[in-house]
Structure formats: C-alpha cells, structure tokens
Length: 166
Image (cartoon, rainbow, N blue to C red):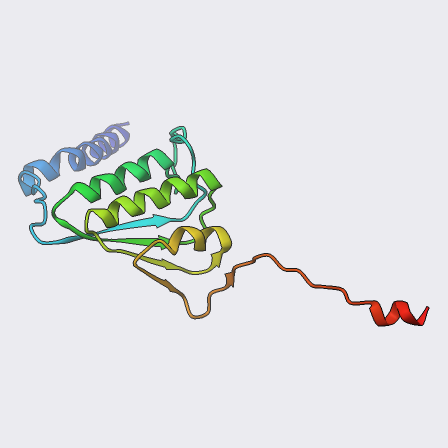
C-alpha cells in the first residue's frame, strides 16, 4: 500500500511540475516584435471560399476555411498598410462563384490602386481562376500544371455539295 501511495505522489508531481516549471525555470516569455522592414502578404487559397465564417470545430478548429469577408478585409488592410510592399496570391484548388470572383477582382484592383504589386501563382488554372488571377501584375503557373481555359466554339457545316448529289 505504501508503494502505491508513493507511486501516485510521484506521478502527481510529474504532472504538476511541467505545468509550472517553464515559467519558473525559463523566465517570462519573449515578446514578439513586429518586423520593421518591408513585408509581403501571402494569401493562400486552398479550399472553397465561404460566404460567412464557418462554425468553429471544437476538436480540429477551422481547417483551411476562409470566408470571403475575411479575405477581402485582409486585402483592404494590406492596401492601407505602409509596411506592405507587395501581395502574393497562391492558388491551390479553391473554387469561387461569379460574385466572389468579381469581389476579389475589385479587391485586387484596390491593392493595385494603392501602389502594391500583386503576384499570383497557381498549380493549375480553370477559366474562373484565370479570370481572377489575370488581374494580377504577374501570373505564373507550375510548369507541369494544367490550364483549362475553355471558350466559345462554333463550326460551320457546309453540306451544299452533299445536297446537290441527292
């Protein structure tokens, strides 16, 4: 019985000690300072764009979910920040509706009007993502990436010679 009590006390001590030891042993946490030089804002589009913020998952949090309102607010904040010198957009499979494309293009135009160059990179392009990213100052695509830009197509059918034979 004595051995069991001693083991429990030792285990309790090892669980309490790590919680209190860092503050006592290592001193106060180091405060992070804001960089003083020029910054480049990187916007990463990985998931479908939501109109409103997603509900918070209690276990994993919001995994790669970004609302349109949050993204446009970040772009407008970057347009007004004097430390931001450029904006980079990384497109990795996000999907957008036509209204979202128009709003994001308008936000990119506001960035450019504020004198911030916008650089865009994509692993692959569709017609809608190309319509969004072609408003950037520079657009690059991975060399092995796909570009699926479709447009209108028509073909005239000339059957005059065939009908003359009938």
